[in-house]
Image 1 (spheres, rainbow, N blue to C red):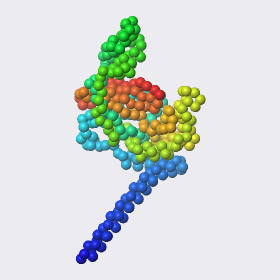
Image 2 (cartoon, helix red, strand yellow):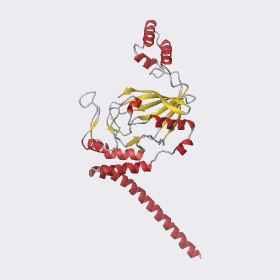
Image 3 (tube, rainbow, N blue to C red):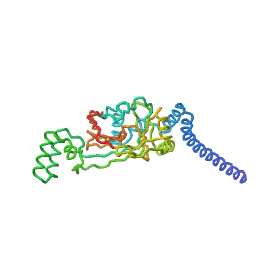
Image 4 (tube, rainbow, N blue to C red):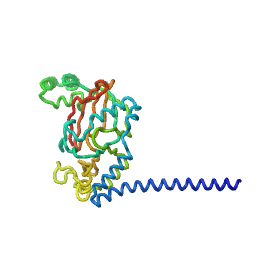
Length: 311
């Protein structure tokens, strides 16, 4: 009887060892198969194999269900709603256009989404035009000591004669703000559903796979003059163009990296105290901007959006 128990124990240990080994080998082969699938697709010039790679990616990291989102914290739920409202790469005119054109992604089926976002809260995030001018004048009175210069600045703000003054001294400007902005939460597994296209959430695994596949052959920043951005060349350029059958990626402006996410890249949302207004900071390729939304009867509507900076 004791011998039988020992034999059973040995058998069970060997069985568990075999099961563990099977799943370990399977997980490695699955990862290798996914990575190799991308290389094989390029070598065989097969858009069909490329799409199979992308489909596997989308199945491995699906968007969060509405049921799961409904169980999240209040501000997290609002962030998911805002993303779904604002994110539409096929219509970049919605957020002020793009230097590559409003329809740069209109034919794309898959969109790469960065799966993390920061949520902030402030006393106030949206200011009307008159409120912006009032705020700027208050800041000029505080921060510009010389009388004649101060009066001149205020005059130009009131006449809207020098927009840079409003940009600098206004509530969204470069001068030190009196508004306290606090970080509420950083979401590290942000997988929002989208209205158009198939989302691909760019975790570390897939970012590394894409970058390894693309390589780093490039013409460096400022090769001929200071306005020259870095450019992919050689095999890296060819692989980038191959991916464009389904996804668009770009070599980074400064070089030595890739811009993999599909714009608008929404990185930060700041809510006011009651989540009545929200300010969304977004990036495009080599540029970015800000959008304002209002919560009306539990639905977010876009007030305005524009590009505000360029690399």
